[in-house]
Image (cartoon, one colour):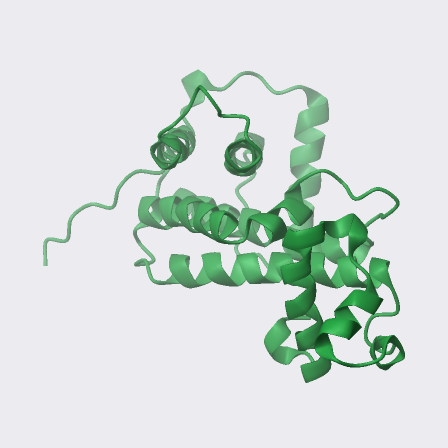
Length: 240
C-alpha cells in the first residue's frame, strides 16, 4: 500500500518507523516506541500493524513502491525513443534513491533481519525496477537492437528454462509487450538487474573502500556496458 493511499494513522506510523529504522535498526523496531512518539497507546495501532513483523512488512513493501515511484518518474521524463537515455536514467535514479534513503535501501537489499521472513506479498513490488529495464530492452529490441551474438556464451538448458519461466511471468507482472524469444536477451536483463543492485550495495555497504572512489561514474560505465551487450545505443539525432 503506497503511503499516499494509506490511512493517516498508518502513514504516520510508517514515517516514524522509517526514521527509527536509521536510529535503532530493524531488529529493535517496536510498536511501543512508535506509539510513544506519535502520542498514542500501542493498542491504537494494532488494527494497522499488530507487531514488529507487520511493521517490517509494510516498510519493505512501501520501500519498494517508493523506490519504483522515484525511478519511474525520472524514466518517464525521457523521450520514449531514447532507449539508452531511459536505460541510463533508471540506473542513475535507482542509485540516487538509495543514497538518499540508505537505511530503507539496506532493509530491502541488505542483511536479512534475524527472525523475520518477508511474505510473498513483497515479491511483486520488488520487481518494479527490473521490469522497467525489461520494458526498455523489449522496446529497443522492437526498434532493431540486438544482443552482440559473438560475445554471448552458449546457454545451458537450465538457463534456457529459467529464461522461459521469466518470459511466461511477464504478462502477470504487467509487461504487456511480448518479450522476444531470445533467452540471451532475457538473461542479459537479469544480469543488468544484478549488476545495478550489486554495485549500489557495494557502494552503500562499504565494499568499494580503497578501490572505487568515482562511484557514480563507475555505475554509469557499468550501465553503458550492459546496454551495449543488449545492443541499446544512443538515439539517432532528429533530422526534422
